[in-house]
Image (cartoon, rainbow, N blue to C red; front, side):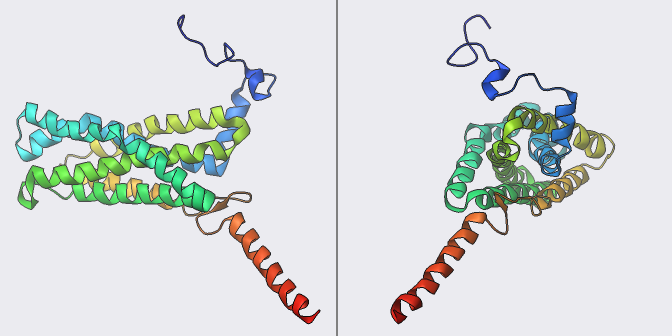
Length: 252
C-alpha cells in the first residue's frame, strides 16, 4: 500500500473515468440486469467456478477412485493447476487473434469453443474409473479439461471490456464474482449432495454445456454476434456499390 501507486499519475480518482461520483447500488443493478452481462456472469461461473471446485476435489478423487496414495494424488491434482502457467493467457491471445480478423464474432467463437470443449472433457473425465483406463487416462482428460477451463477464463475477459465500456469496473467485478458463485452452485448442487463418485462430474459438465450454449444468442448492434459482424455488412455494401459503378463507367 505504501510502496506503490494506483496509476502513473498517482492515486486513482473516479474523475479519471469521466465520472463525478463512485458507483452505487443502482449502478450495479443496472449493469447486472443487462442480459449479456447476466449471461457472462454465469458463463464465467462455468469456467472459473469449475477451477475452484476442482482445486478442492481432485486429490481426494484420485485417492478414493483410483487407489493412489495421497502424495501421488496431490501431484496428479497439481497438473490441473499447472495449466494456469499458460492456458489462461492462451485464451486471451486466441481471443485477440480472432478479434483482429473477425472482430467480436471471432471473440465469441473462441469463447464458445473453450466452454464447449471444457464441458466435453469434463464429461469424459467423469466417465473414467479403474476399469476404463485408470488414472493415466483420467490425467490426460484432466489436462485437456484444465486447458479449456483456463482458456475460457481468458476469452471471458477478452469480451468483458466491450460489454458496457463506461461501466467496465462494475462489469469486471460482477463477472469475477460469478466465478465464486459458480463454485458455490456446483459444490452444493453436485458434489455435496450426490454420493456417486462420477455422477457429479457429469452433471457439472451439463451445467457448463448449458452456459456454453448461451454464448450463441449474445449480440450487440454495433459489435455483431457469432453469426454476423458489422464490418462484413459494410464490406458487402461497398462491394455492391463498386460493382454498380463499374457498368456505369463502361457505358459512359
